[in-house]
Length: 263
Ligand code: BV8
Image (tube, rainbow, N blue to C red):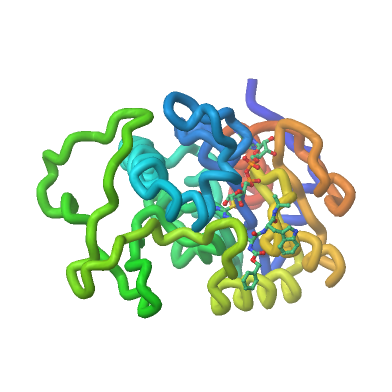
């Protein structure tokens, strides 16, 4: 059965001139990319993601952490954008001023056609050197396509930077690390100036990213939340759509935009 979304969410989106779409790991769940809430498996089962996603974990055991990121990168490369990602790109195509802000480190928004998503926590596809210069590093296997897919739970020694021989690290923001200043400023400015903020698939507990929907609400925007379960963002949402990204977002876009095109 086609999902019917509360008409007020569709009307809010249809009437908005400036929209921010704020996404978390739940956005990519239906593409088969595990969320941070999902238990880790294999070699990493004895950790929780917050322990592994740190500079300390990487320096304590680079092969373990690099192996985790290489496994995640291979999962993303084999994944496809889901209907939710396509619906977000459709929103950006229809709303005069639409900004996509993501906490995710995958490239599924880009592959679904979203232009210039703001990555608050970096990317699995932007490795960099651990040296202070933090110059970009390339994947040694990027050129040869037949590099073996890293198996789950494998330890993989990180490559060395071709410029200075220091270790290469994932180009993500670890816990305890500052977010990229330009990305955070752009996200906060967009949230402070939008009419509607659509938050999708986030538990809303990791800061300072979790401030973004709260800034929008404090600035008078209507917050619409898409999540199958309640989260701390329920309190700031004007509308809570209980469901998954791949189900709710296409229905919301159809209800907001196709109806006008039909009428
Ligand atoms: C920092 C990259 C300081 C790595 C990630 C207050 C202010 C500032 C900081 C803090 C603060 N309080 C505490 C802190 C410290 C910390 C923090 O927030 N801790 C939390 C746990 C309390 N923050 C930091 O450390 C940040 N840095 O503050 O630095 C500083 C300042 C200056 C100078 C030096 C230092 C850095 C945080 C970034 C960490 N990196 N990712 C990687 O990916 O490996 S965070 C990572 O976890 C994700 O990117 C994401 O942001 C977060 C997980 O959150 P979600 O995306 O919400 O995903 P989650 O799995 O939790 O939830 C999924 C949701 O989807 C669920 O609600 C589920 O119901 C829903 N869902 C499931 N399926 C679906 C679905 N929804 C829709 N459809 C579905 N199908």
